[in-house]
Each structure stands twice: as C-alpha cells, then as structure tokens.
Amino acid sequence: MDTQQFSNHLLRLSSEIPVTRLEELLGKIESAGVSLSQASKEEALSETEMMAGRDPVRRLDGTLVIRFVSDEPDLRIPTPAVPG
Image 1 (spheres, rainbow, N blue to C red):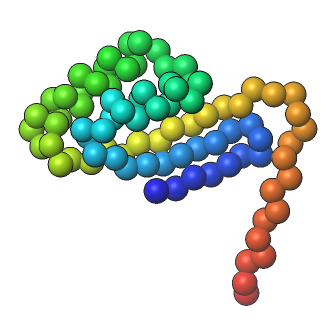
Image 2 (image 1 turned 90 degrees about the vertical axis):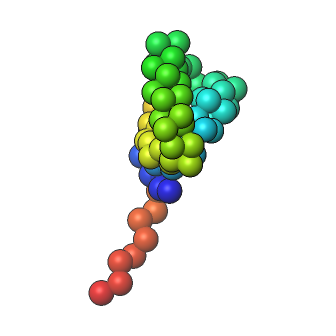
C-alpha cells in the first residue's frame, strides 16, 4: 500500500494481504535473508489461524520496518518540488 525510504538506513513497507497468505509471506521474508524470531512467527500464525477460521476472506494490514546496518554515508534522495 505504501513505502518510505529513510536514506540508506531504514525502509518502511505498509501492506495488506489475505489472512490465508501470512505464512507464505513470512517464508518469503525469511528467504530474502531477514531473521524472524520463532516466537513472533508462532504468535502471528496462531492468531491468523483463528482469524481465517472465522473469516477466510479477511485481510490483514501490517507494517514491516527493515533497518540496514552499514557504515556508508547517507544516501541523497532528491525532494520533489511542491507546486504553489
């Protein structure tokens, strides 16, 4: 739904997915090299199983924040001119 980049240090992604696809999303995030704790995965999956049982077409809103660890200088992102 939305994304915002904070220099080369942080990326914020806002998304909406069907509740039945959360397990697939978590797997894709891990296959991309992002570490998720076992406790957080288990908690998320148990909650979504209950939700999917009650309403299988329900959609989940979520935000994923990824912090990049590097010693590179700030990335310059040009700010577009605002009309008016």
